[in-house]
Each structure stands twice: as structure tokens, then as C-alpha cells.
Amino acid sequence: MSSLSDSLHEQLPSPVYAREQLAERISELGEWFHNLNLGGVPTAPHHFLGDFPSIKWRQIADAIPLDLTGASVLDVGCNGGFYSIEMKKRGARRVLGIDVDDRYLNQARFASEILGFDIELEKRSVYAAEAIPGQFDYVLFMGVFYHLRYPLFALDRLIKKVGGKLIFQTMVRGSQELQSWHENYPFWNTEIFEQRDFPKMFFIEHSYSNDPTNWWIPNRAAVEAMLRSSGLEIESHPEPETWICRPTAVVRDGQYILDRELEGSL
Image (cartoon, rainbow, N blue to C red):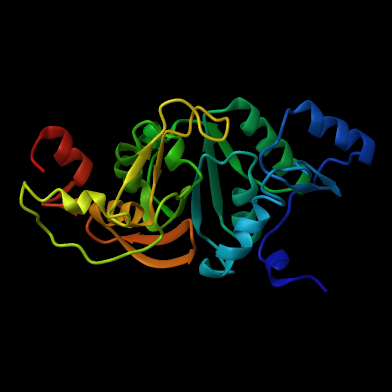
């Protein structure tokens, strides 16, 4: 018996490879960060995080509707295409994956062909996502934020593409605790900055986990403060690194927050 998720989409005819040919082609595409099951061949069977990103997806899957029939999805930093494929499995009408890495885009293209899914893929930076026409019902911003030198600028810019929900995930370090903070503090109050659960971003000058693109790593309080500051309402927090949000105050006096900031009127 087919599952509901299988029945929600039409798969395209997929190319037929012998298992050995498939394994060879997967290897030719370089090292994979997304572990996908392509015809019984795993793409990253020895991932240091385990069966990633399936282990992450299982924690957040219930926070996203099973039936996405007719929905449009933008997958920012799509990597090998795991999340794009999962959204297409749920019936999304249009899925656009963007990334700046040709290796990842080639992997995602190959994976979608093997699995028979019609997914658009485009080489584009998150900083240039604003130029994509229209908005999307779901924007996936998974595992990108901490790789950006200018993360809040990217978030404020990407918000313009969110027509429905933003699914936001980032590495989190430091305190996972939350408390209420006053809206203002006197200049001479420096004690708040010594509190471990005060909103903080940790700056990595050189490298973290052997990755020089790990620039800014927030604690939980900083993540939630930035999401609210960008005009988003947090609807749910399905696992420690993921938030489901919707735009409620991203426009002020008829302009997006970013545009007001850039013109000096915020």
C-alpha cells in the first residue's frame, strides 16, 4: 500500500542505473553533506552527524503540513536537495532550491532526477534571493544563518520572499535558557552582558569544526530576539535548532524593515 505522502505527488520517470553505476556516479559528484537514499545507495553513509539530515527532519516533520498540494517552496542553501525533495514528496507545486556551491547543486540535480522529482535549482546567494520574483508559501532557511558573515542582513532581506511560513534552523551554542528582559537599560548597567542567557552571538574569527564559514553562532535567546526584531512571530519550536515563523510586522509604515534601515529611517 502506498503512503499518503507517496500519493500526493506525481513522480517523473527516473533514469535507470545499475547499483554499481549509481554508486560510481554518486562518488563522482564529490563528497555529500546530505545523506540521501538513491536507489538503495546512501550518498553520505559515514556522516559525522549520523543519518543527516533525516535525523533532523524527523524532529520537525510534524510541524509542517503533510499535504502541501499547490504550495510554493523556496529552499535557501538547498545543498544536496534533501529538504526540497521532502517538500516535493508532500505535493508542493513548485520547489526552487538555491545554493552558491556548484557541487551541491549538481548533487541536488542528480538526486531529484534519480528520485523523479521536478525541482528547480539555481545558483544564487541568499543575499540575492530578494530578486526572485514573487513570494513563497514556505521558505526553508536551514543550516545557512551561521555560515553568513552578515546574517541579520540576509534574514531581513529574505523575509521579503516569505508569503506564508519561514522554517528557520541554525546551529545554536551557549545557553538554551530564556528569560524576560526589560525593553531598556541605563548606560551604566553592564551586568546584563554577564548573564549567560542574555541574547548573544559568538563570532568565530578563524574556524569552528574545521569550517572557516562558521562565522556567527547565536544562543537561543539571540535567535528568538532576532526573529522577533525582524518582524516574525514564532509559532513553534519543534527542536532545539529550528523555529517555525510567520511574518506579522515585517513592514512598518509601508516599507520593509531592511529598506527603512538602508535609507536611515528605521
